[in-house]
Image (cartoon, rainbow, N blue to C red; front, top):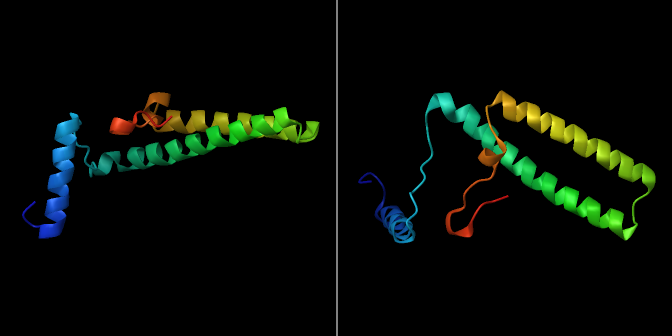
Length: 112
């Protein structure tokens, strides 16, 4: 840490103290070239899964509210099924499971 400017070193010191106080193991970015692709895929698929869940909840609210036609409901169902199939393929390609997409946010709990 000696190569960091003083202000930045102070910020890292405070963050390390908070992590220690909370009993959280500090997470660092793994710069291993062999794992970069998998890590990026994990991040992207996590964001896609979060958005999918939000869109699905909105679609259900709209269906229950009666603001969608039968054709729109069918198209939404097909879209969500195709998205689920593609997500399953990508998770298998990068050797990721559902738990890998449910990131631990420390004191805030799990993301999904």
